[in-house]
Amino acid sequence: MIQRIQTVYLFLAAVIMFSMIFFPFVEIIDAGDRYYRFDLHGIHEGMGETARLIQSVLPLRFLVLVTAILSLGIIFLYKRRILQIRLCVFNMVLMAGFYALFFFYLYHLNQEVDTETINYKIPLVFPAISIILAYLAIRNITRDELLVRSYDRIR
Image (cartoon, rainbow, N blue to C red; front, top):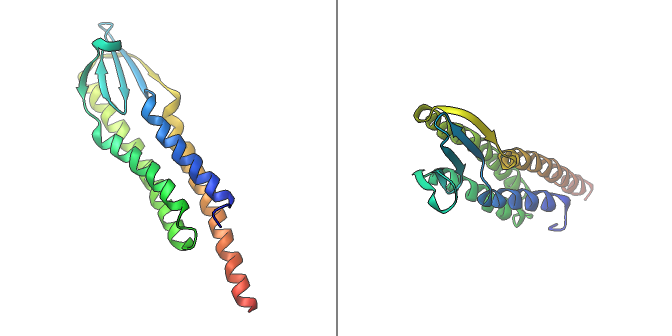
């Protein structure tokens, strides 16, 4: 059962969530032409090697890593399909929680900084894509469960 399509969906969701480590989410320029970068390593003021860490976003980093590892772990629970479905739903809730925590940090940054320009980057949609992939995995896991139950009825 590990060669099923839900394995591909869950693996892609894990890869997408792991890739968020390498890219910034938001770039902010304030009224004083100061540059801020928000990624999983923290909120930094300045560019390049002179960037200064303003705020750590360790809970956000932890959440991203947990969702990626959970997506990989769900793949190997193929013999326990109901548990797979429940963990996929839990993973989707965690991915939605990413957005809540992200906007919490962004709101507090906006309170401290007089923002002039906010540039949202592409990796900000990665959790939404992962939610969609987890939903597709749930649909296929449910289909497998119904197929197994129908075979049990025939016996």
